Image 1 (tube, rainbow, N blue to C red):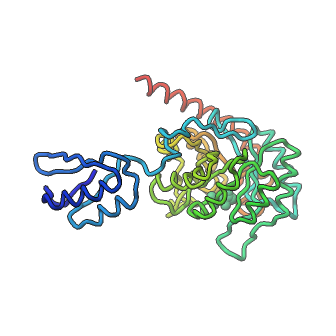
Image 2 (spheres, rainbow, N blue to C red):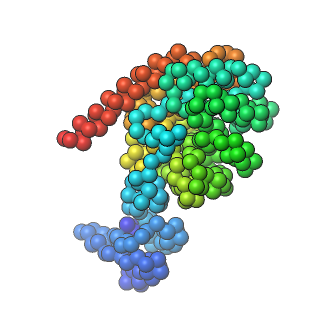
Length: 351
Ligand code: PEP
Ligand code: MN
């Protein structure tokens, strides 16, 4: 919809507008109200240059587009029936739980092996473990490729699929060669379009999936979905969207919790939504509540930092990892809330 500044355009202005939209195969429909005239665009309006050229006209106030800028991730795309499978299970059927340490400590691999066995016992479906870590300070522990062997050993011992973050092409190659099941794109790289494309190309034709965190600096929901579109556009739509809190923080929490956007993402895209409560609230004692909130908002699962002995962990684990005992209760209760949520959706749908 094109909204002019003045109530009506001159015939010359209208002609200029028609000329521009015509170049993009779009015809204009004049909608004449009592006091002003606006113009509907008939055709595919998802051209950034089209919008920029119209908004650049000094007699135009703004353009409101109805169509979404993403083509593959939307509910009406040909991908809408795609199922993201991890280890054969469909993410989005039931409530998936990804759990494990923020950071694998290569000096203490046994903690990770114990954590892996314990999260499996607690009912988790996928094991997470940070090999390379995006740290705000270059002086903090950055990760170590040795931890990749520990991750893969834990996968072999437990049979769980594994998730780890990659930040560059070298790490991506190492993770793919090792057989990592799920590649995590962290909040700092969710706007790194070059990396998103590279990951998309690397997983093409493979069963690997991508857990795409929301950038803490992203604006609207569509910006998040468009980042996923970068991966999908390379040919493999095995993408899971992961809200993890945004900036500025909510006083008292590590970030501004955003599990509530699960409901918005579900209205706009077919992709499963797995919420990260750990980085969102940033404190172990709040994490269980945030897990339940995620389930209440209709998330398809959670990714929760868990450690057999958080105080012996490195990275985020001492402050925000929950123990396997807590995880067991969280899984039981979050799955119950998930079922309650499904009941509400059916109930509202039948009204
Ligand atoms: C993590 O999962 O440990 C992590 C660094 O996450 P984020 O990118 O969301 O901060
Ligand atoms: Mn972490």
